[in-house]
Image (cartoon, rainbow, N blue to C red):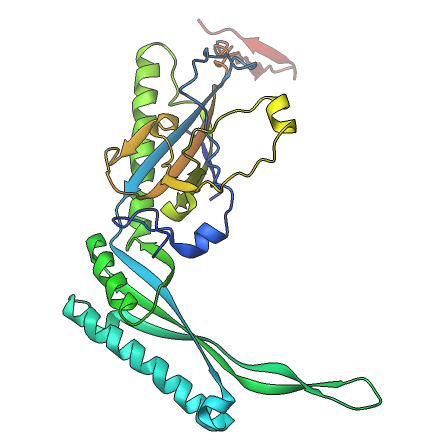
Amino acid sequence: MKLFLCLFGFLSLAALHGQVMGNYQTQNARAIVNHQPAFRAVQRHAALSGDPSVIEFTINALSNQPADAYVAIFSIFQTVQNEQAGNAGEAIRSLNQTMNERVDAVKARLQALGIAEEDVYVDLVNFLPTYAFSAEKKLFSKKTLTEVPTGFNLQKNLHVRYRKAGLLDGIMTACAEEEIYDIIKVDYMVSQPQAIYQELREMTFGYVKELKRLYTANGVNLDSAKQHVGESAWVVNPTDRYETYSAHASQKLTADEKSAAIITQIEKPSLRFYQAIPANDYDMVLNPDLLEPAAQYSYSLKIRFTIQPPKAPAKPEVITKTEIKKQFYYLAADGKMVPLVLE
């Protein structure tokens, strides 16, 4: 059997337990990740290939995996004016000292939650001087605007790693007590993705093996067919699977009512929910009943069997034998060759 393989190869939280969207995803709305569904929930008839010697299968496998760890990222922003500290150097020292005191206080509260110091990381993101225009008035000409330094802005991000989803409530409270309110996002960590892909691949090829057995048992031998295989694998994290909706019922006005009145509408809140990739697009699903949002690992295998035409029966081999007869002669007294007859 010949095999050809191509490897294509805190405040505005959607959920506190499991995956959390955070403010970044809320303010930077993006299209939900398209998983290219096959819409198997819609009834479709089986179709025959245009080439009777070709049989194709597309097998999709899905693995829903809970997080082994989470990383919540909080933003800390603080500003200081030069006149508050007296000079630029003193302003920088005062600004950094104040922020570090807030961070140290959060770390102490996190340790009380069981989060070790090595699971907290402070990332210096921005340290920027600020400027403003100072106006100088003149009697007989336009006033002069001169840009002068006014102070500094400092941003640090606090990365907190934790392994139990329920800890996020305590983490948020610890940060809020130090006036840290902006949770940017929560990353979803799975420790061994390669093992997940390997499990999906083995499960899919086992599915193919069973298909071949069933087809062979019903008169279609796929073991002797030439095979061409393509595969792809990908993962969709929960942050990419939140959708937006608005829950309200508003009165509908007629055209006359609209033209005869000044209408003021209130802003309706936009709500979000987790929309997992539907399992109906897959032949095999691991952990289908997972309650919390999960990292969804997909594996797709497409295999084409080209059935070889039967060989023509071999023609019988014709064997030609050549028989050589021997003839003996003797030399007579008169010098002639006389045939010798042997009985």
